[in-house]
Image 1 (cartoon, rainbow, N blue to C red):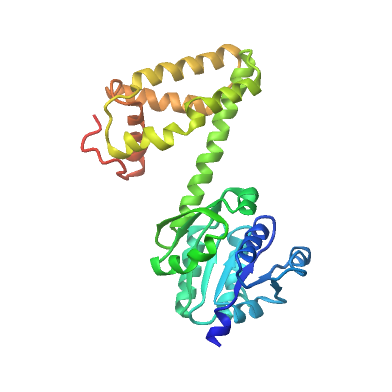
Image 2: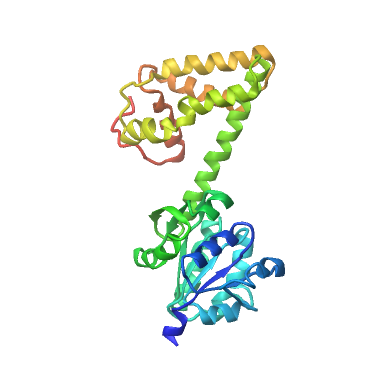
Length: 307
């Protein structure tokens, strides 16, 4: 029985994102059994090498690794903990790989219930969208025990260009949520910039191109500046806080001049003014992030003295 079960991988949730991920697994040679409550989603696999399960219990009984790609935590709780859910029928030794952008609380709850049944969970949400799934270029952010992560790795490699083991169970989900928070927050800042630019007389496509080719578009802050300054607690000035404040103040002034309300930019300016009031103007602009450290009660940068 063990040999039979270990020959097959289950995939639950073959919708918009799960479908190309499952297809990549199939193309990589994995013996795949899929399940989805949507008949149309299941039917895509009816004439492929993959088999289609008629129920969750069937899928779980035939697979020692079960992947999930569901809309969110509500669906994960239903599939995992519902009356006929996976936890109720899971066999000892089964590994569940959850690709859902989930709640860390739900991840840990499900992980504990699986542990009590002799099974295990890793949370492995992905970044890169449907296009990345189809091309096999997703980034997978994974949380869980190292041996469980290694067991899942051959599957993840079928659709991932990068696999980042972030930490214990739930860490992958936290990382994915922070990625999305940063991405969508940046979208809103760029929205403010584009509206100011248009009101100031710049074509929006030209301004977007300018942003793409300038430092923000090259990812310099994320890849170079913050790792070398804030993360190391090194605030020797590359770009002083005073200089950054001057630029943001001018940008907010321009917004006022052309009649564009800017909520996010004003918050950024206010943070800089608070840091300036502490006499930090001659330090690197990234020192303003230490205000958030203090509010959160965490110590990220390795500095001994912010000033």
